[in-house]
Image 1: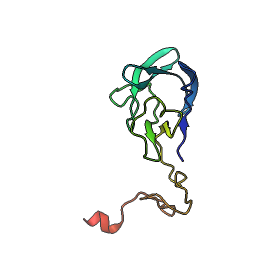
Image 2: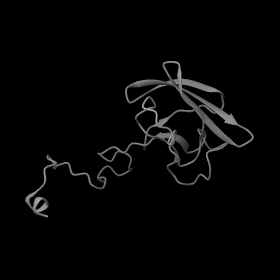
Image 3: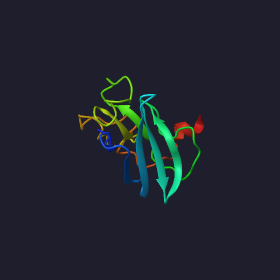
Length: 137
């Protein structure tokens, strides 16, 4: 199971500090009743980096913004079970829909079976150097 940003949708606006990739960010979660979606505002050192971004199912947070001050880790609104239809009222924070840290552990800890190795992961690989066959191609 992936790590996620805890959201308290029963106490809005939910304002909290969280450490992501070694930096402290302030998150503010609000709900838009007209459009039935939650929004996120992200601040760092009292500077607004992202304002009222809609939290939409299966979308990265802040994907359209080029801001090097945003968290360097991808945040994705998703349902790991694949059952949710949206991230609106009754879904985000209460069900399986969360703001997940979209990071895959190279050791495969996101799976229920610890013996499964992720595609392309080779624990015996010690070098990125090309083999003789690759060089001659």
